[in-house]
Image (cartoon, rainbow, N blue to C red; front, side):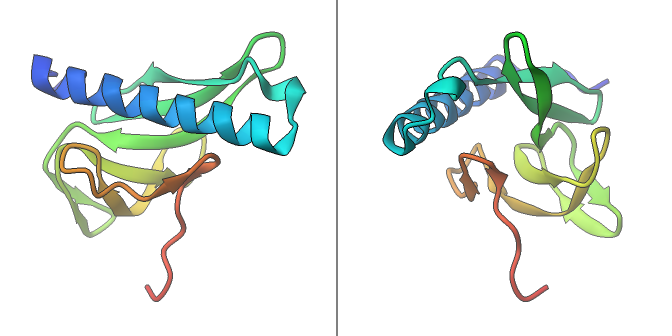
Length: 118
């Protein structure tokens, strides 16, 4: 399992806090009072950290993944910090949607954005 550095953990925590704040503001703006307790949390992983949306009393669902390794995923290059859409509950989809470490991650309150033109 790759070692998570303190710098990586700090940037991941900052990213999750930012997404949680944006989700909370979006839910309030839309009047979704039943979603007020939703928050994104790290659900673990060895090569890819799973980020899931947890709501007390209702369970969780996958929001996305963050790569912990440099390499390839289904033939596409990935590097540490890449934000990946979920292909399933257990696996990320091919192609990064930006990187959380350099601030290029593209996402919405619902998860990493779809790719157009691939």
